[in-house]
Length: 343
Image 1 (cartoon, rainbow, N blue to C red):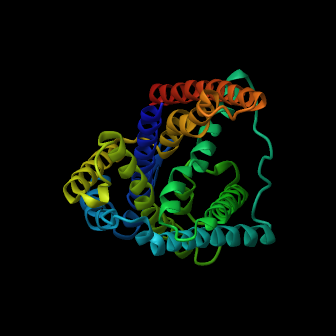
Image 2: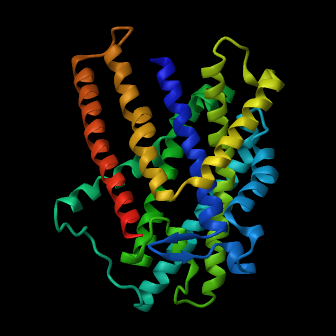
Image 3: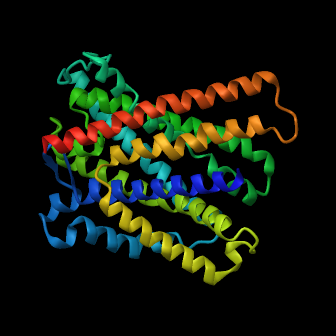
């Protein structure tokens, strides 16, 4: 059970690292294509399309000169300032998006977005389930709690820190989705950053577009080492359960770090879409970590402290997770096959 949890956690966090790399480079810096339309990245918009600002080259350069130094720290508290800066950049992204949306609402240049989805047939119902894995992925972050708790001098700060973090993240998620949908309406893309490559209908539109995308790119860049830290720690525990802590073994630390960077870099190049990545990650690893594994721990109940109500809730949680995400996986796969047939 413990090894299964560790393996699932490692796989999930590798996907999260892949998603960070893909979103940061391909969608923000190098551009992306959606529905047959190419959305220019920051570098492509500034300098035009060249070999040096293609996906693979940009990934390679920033992996070597940005991510590699950041993931070389052996303690999580060494990333405290970069983490704080990443939160500030996320707030900047939300504030600018909200400001633009409010200005356009005041000017009357924003159409009323649809409040409910269009359900024409059974396939439309199945498509609704594809949003569930993405939401689940956003809230699976508890694997960092133990690492943070181990480095806190005052253990009583753990609960307030976790609650504050969840409240802050939830506020950013809700504000981003609300104002982005208000701003772009039915034209909101899977990756909302791709919407910021056109005229927003306000003064200095191109400047705001670049500020939004640069701030988010920097935010993702600074989030990456936090996810990577937990991935490396858990992978080491899975492969070397009886060895001393990885921070005391420079050789093992270096080999695992370089190996993970190579695997993540390679996987990030071939990810077709950030939406597809989050859907499949959320419907598999995230569901296991967030719902199924915790429920299995309750059902196993090695200390005999779980009540009958706890076990009923655990079984219900497993059934709901399996059913809803089986539907989501089926819908995701069918959507990908349909896109290939159209292409």
